[in-house]
Amino acid sequence: MIVALFAFLAVVSLVTLFLIEGKDGLLRDLAADGPDVVLGMPALTDPRNLYSEAGPNKLDNAVMKALPRVYVPNIRSGDVYVIDPLTLKVADHYDVGRNPQHVVPSWYLKTLWITGSAESGGASGSLTPIDPTTAKPGQVIPVPDAYNMYFMPNGQSAIVVAEEMRRLEFRNPKSMTFQSSLATPDCAGINHADFSAGGRYAIFTCEFSGGLVKIDLIARKILGYLKLSDRSMPQDIRISPDGKTFYVADMMSDGVFMIDGDKFAERGFIPTGIGAHGLYPSRDGTRLYVANRGSHSVHGPKNGPGSVSVINFETRSVERTWPVPGGGSPDMGNVSADGKYLWLSGRFDDVVYVINTVTGEMKTIPVGQEPHGLTVWPQPGRYSLGHTGNMR
Image (cartoon, rainbow, N blue to C red):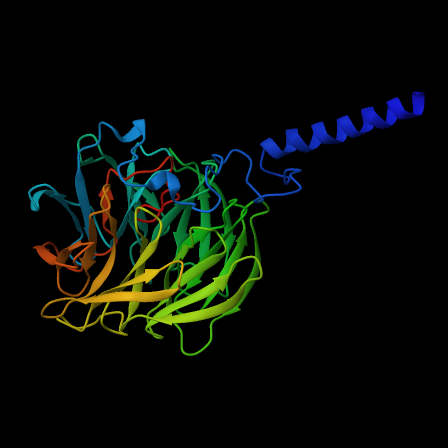
């Protein structure tokens, strides 16, 4: 009896130790089945659809006071255009300095962040907050480089993507004070990412080295690199609703690679269109919109053969493709809260496209020079993993 009691107490002590350390994000939880979930991450409500809580008009209380706006960062003109989605008119615009790349919703949904990238041998980067209740910017926070930004699935850190420096910087998600960094020396052009169903790891694309890098978010270490087949230039990446497959848009291969995230291996390829670039799930989680930029060049021509392809997640095939009338360059953006419209920047044409997700009908709105990672706000979801609204 005494031996059994001591054995029981020893097990209790070990479990307590794991739980205490786990709260600090140092050790894995003890779940024997189900997704390997990061401690503190909101629970999955439907393992068959990671996007179930980002469905049509499922707005969180945190965004109820936000003005309905579309925020468009323009790289070359160094400003952000603010569009009223009801009137399709530019309601405001303001200068934000060099190289504004993306407008990123915070994990807490209370702030939008403009990421500004560094220049080779030139200016450093920046993070500029926007108050979505006023649509006005706040004080600029200097950082070494901020091409893009993501958030830990439990909200404990922002992950600033320092593309020029080939590293990730973990920062306080509200104040943006520095916490730690992780070098990714073999990932040239590290830029876009998505997260496993349980949030234990993320896969980032390496644009200029033609591959991917897998990151252990708890240990904050590199798990491995994957070189994609063919001549590759990977761009955006999104996980499938069932959490089993990562879809990677590839600008050189003109389509989307399918990646087994756990095994970190290719599973197949879906041809879409010239310069496949941005990826956005539909609000019902059944389809994936692929923005085909119409060029293999980083600085392509106006009026190129741009298009938008629609992939069915279940069949893993393209259902239809909508060419841009007269040519264009669909790049980055997101879907409206009700799911009825897909908003995309026209990177080389200095416009924004508003695309009906049923008919494919397109309208254009002139903006600044070289629009990039626009975001629609508010969006449905309980929290944001970053980019232009990777919502869950």
